[in-house]
Structures are given as C-alpha cells and as structure tokens.
Length: 223
Image 1 (cartoon, helix red, strand yellow):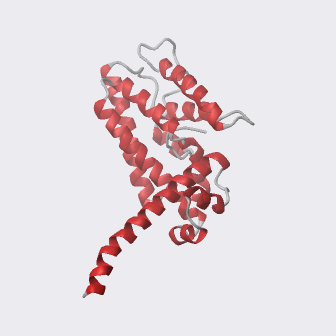
Image 2 (tube, one colour):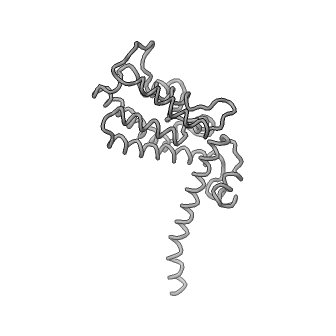
C-alpha cells in the first residue's frame, strides 16, 4: 500500500514537469526561430530551454513538429489577446491599434516563412487557430466601418501586408534594435487608416481571403 500511495502523488508531478518542459521548449524555439531562422540548431533551442537534447527530442521528434507547435502557440496566444482587446477597447480603431502593436511584439512575421516550409496550411488545428484570429480581426474592421473610426476603402489584408513589410528589418540590422522603429512606422500607417480618408486609393481593399487565394499564409506581422 505504501508503494502504490507513493506512486500516485508522483504521477501528476511528472506530468506537470513534462508540460513545463514542453512550454519551455516552445518558448525557446520561438525566440531562436526569430533570431536565427527556422534552421537554428536544435541543440541551441535545448540550451535556451534549459533541458537536455534527449528531453527535446522526446517531446518533438523532428523540427517540423516543433515549428508547428511554435506557430500554433503564438497564433493561439495572439487570438486570446486580440479577443480581450476587442472586448475592452473603447472603439474599434483603438482595438485595431492594440492588436497590431501586440502582434509586432510577438514577432509573428518571423514565423511566416515557416508556414510555407514546415506547415501544412490545411492542418486542422492551424485552421481553427487562424480562423479564430481572423474572426477577431474581421470583427474589428466591421465595427470600425460601422462606428466611422476606420476608412471604408481598406481591409484586413492591407494591414497585414503593410505591417509585415514595415516589420522586416533592414539587412544587417538586429531585429531587437529595429523593433522601436517598427512600432513608430506602424503607427504612421495606422494613422493613415483613420476616417475620414484623405485620399482615393487605387485598386480595392485586400481581404484575408484575397491573400490566401494568392498563396499568402496570413497572420499578423513582424520581422
């Protein structure tokens, strides 16, 4: 009886430790992917996570599965934050500003190349996470059109393209040093989206579906 009693309390602790290790690996991988790209040595990720290589491979047998977990984690986190922002912001334009700046802080643009290289865009979990985020962003735009804070000739796709381009650092510039300029220049872009509009834009507003139809995997920006 003593032996069986001792095993039961230990089992949840082992599971909790495994969960913490997995979370540390995913967080370290996100940092390393942003800094070095998707080809960063897995040894470096293990070192940053403070675990051994064997532990990393026990959780993630290959790079593809690790990249998938990083992307799902980041998109899920941003969707959660975006939902909270949209619910609390005083108006739609304020919500848009906070969501875009928040996505920049998560450096999502650095993960975009991993979509095409490491992920199946039809992955069911990815579709759920992406659709959840899309619904928030599209809802903010619809509210912005309705309350008159957002010009009616722009769409979510326009913001994604602009923010991704602005957030990409110049060659040779450390992304960390580039980040303050990203927030500054993105704010300039966001100010240009305010209603009333001051110019007539050529073409039409880009939707998220427009980007997907052209093979662009959509999240929010950075890198």
